[in-house]
Length: 112
Length: 113
Image 1 (cartoon, each protein chain N blue to C red):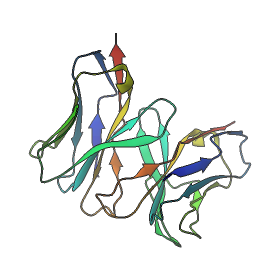
Image 2: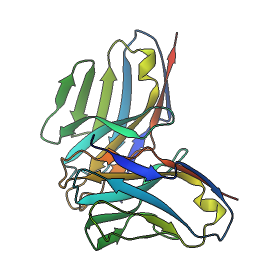
Image 3: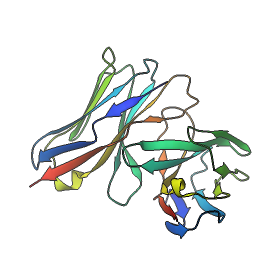
Image 4: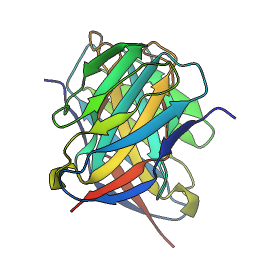
């Protein structure tokens, strides 16, 4: 079946760039998403990319999609303490009836 | 304000005592879902509903029931809770379509003793 994989933790220094990686197995994915979950809160959509794009930039966020390798990444420039959160990668395969397939989430830890 | 609300936010209960977690959205969304979040497993979909009176099983439906009698409400029912249902539960809604943003509720932390 479909699968989405992420590392569970990433630790970066404040001010550095963070790169959170995600791999997926379903080549028919239509949309790929990054959600952010701050401590004690629900999930908030950060950004998404349609499968016919290979890059999307939004202020400090850059999403890169490599369809050949089925690899999605989220780069956060100039990482701040407010970026501490769990970041979830998710995809919607073509025939999924709009059901999202979720990764396990990457906890981003910011070191001062 | 557009939002998804869940109640209660926290609940501690005992094995076998029926409970309901309510979910309500004020955005006239057609599509609603319930997820559970467990450490290292991410989000797993329990049930979803594509419209009133239309519900379907997600990845982990065992031990749960849902109903969708009105568009705005999508309650999650645990008829006989067990300790393995201790988890963080999220309700979500979206208008429709693959590109539409899912809006999440604040979560309900359930502990079953």
